[in-house]
Length: 242
Image (cartoon, rainbow, N blue to C red; front, top):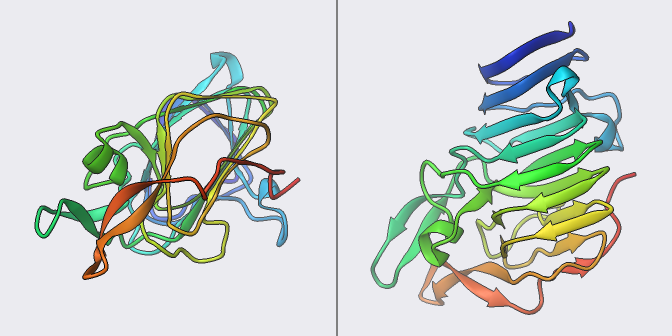
């Protein structure tokens, strides 16, 4: 999309979405099986966002349905305020009750990365997973879900109104698979669920419980539950990109 587009509602049901154009809208639905970004830098993902603007609408509500068959990179740059939810994005395909209640078979797009960079305020709301996630199925919580690294940055206030859940394995890969939050003010109204070896980072102190994906037993290493952790954050650290 190399031309600028303005619409009250914009819906994209596509594989990949890219281009240098600016999408100005009140509501955006991204039903994506591939990547969303506009790559101009090989080193700084903050420069590679697909641009969405508020324009006359004051804020943009964005639904992110990440439904790919391989790891996805979704990189959004929002000029203004954004309210995001994770739509039907899931982290696991199956649920089992024996030998114990748990989830198994990570979604095929596990291991991707989500980056949302808003110049204004950023509000994070839950979605409703099409399949399963540890927050809903194990902890009974609503969640913003993505099966990979989650990096959220705001120039104003960040308000997290749900569990952020990117937990899909005990040992995730090294490509920024944790949770990263950066804003002058961050308000968190739920816990985090992440992978067994990843960390929840924030640019300033936040108070929130962190659960990790963990096998229900050594005898069933592919069936996962959520276990409260004291080693996976939250920690105060700089956002990984400037």
